[in-house]
Amino acid sequence: MTIDNLHELTGKEVAVSDWLTVDQRRIDLFADATEDRQWIHLDRERSEHDSPYRTTVAHGFLTLSLLSHLSRNVLPVEGVTMRVNYGLNRVRFPAPVRVDSRIRGRFTLQNVKPFSGEGSSGADLTFAVTIELEGSEKPCCVAEWIVRYYR
Image 1 (cartoon, helix red, strand yellow):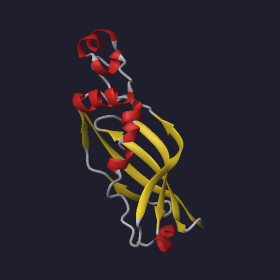
Image 2: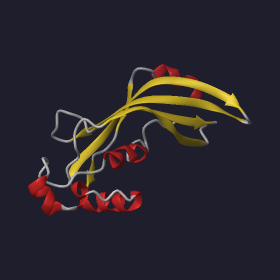
Image 3: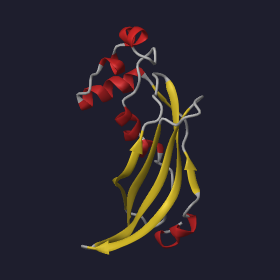
């Protein structure tokens, strides 16, 4: 694919990532990085008794932050020099990610919008992303994600 013919994939699922286990170490490191140390994420013993999930759960923003990793090989495009996270239009977290759960991303290309100016050109790709939770009917995250591809 090239930036010029990406529009051919609009409306199609372009990738499904491999499964990724969200373990307690990853949750702990995220809590440290974000200063979000709520007990529901870190205290297994208390979570067993006081949480409706009966174990620790990942931060919603941790799940969201894994979009880049899950999409690493989503859409190889020839002639692209750089790909950057341009933003999100909408995000929801319908189901919790319990510790040691496995997640994967499904990516559908919704829109391709070319851009040029200020010495650069390329296209903004909008993806409908569903992060699935293994064994759950509900996804753990749904988002509309914009990724900027530069020539």
